[in-house]
Amino acid sequence: MQPTPLRVRRLHPALARALACALLLGLGACAGSDRRTAHLYGGPAPSVEAALSRLPSGPLTCVPFARELSGVRINGDAHTWWNQAASLGYARGAAPRPGAVLVFARAGRLSLGHLSVVTHRASAREIKVTHANWGDTRATRGRIDQDVRVVDVSPRNDWTLVRVWHAPSGQLGITNYRAHGFIYGPSDTSQAELSEAVERAAWAAHESRPGQSVERAPRLAMARAPARPATAALPLPPRRTR
Image (cartoon, rainbow, N blue to C red; front, side, top):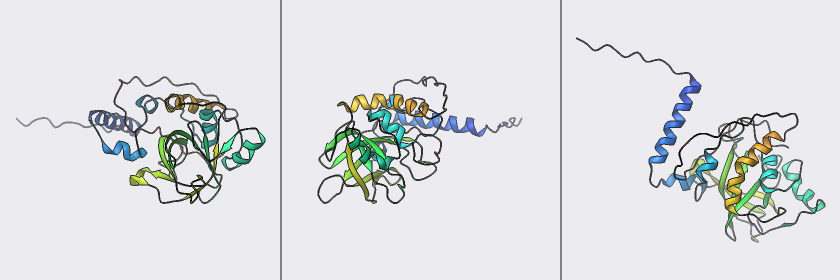
């Protein structure tokens, strides 16, 4: 007797994607030490708590996220923050420290500038940052990237020219980005405090948009797992604005 052939039903695309993500997470948890973990972020991976949190479904841009995570209460496009900070009484400087906002100048693909929040000072010329909407493709834009490596390549070591870790190639990016410097928040903070504040900042940034009403989704029920790289992907935002 021949065995009865199995009938395979085609999964709905959304369900298929969810199952694929679950499988990948399971495989990641089995690895003892995956070098790709460090390569994606240029250093230690972010905590699993922040990576597995359910974040807002709407688009996030760099300005509201940096404002909520750093406590620097400035509005307007990213490139305007540097001059606004002086008039609003915020201290500015060329020395990175956790919680400070690195202000990228308006140039090239950063038509409105960009904002990143410093999470760790590795050395005089290397830091880690967390920011939103850094990617330049549909697959990478609109998401939050944690603890990304940024290196100072300015001739005078004043952080006016930087390079950012490029995850797809697993190495430091080759593009030199102009930067104004750092805007310091109202209080000192630690890397651990900043990591814990990422989800709160994402929700606050999303809900602060005019006319936005969001029902907070429950946290994913997942067991604690070793730290691994996982970036919360969010829909493509129209542009990097307020």
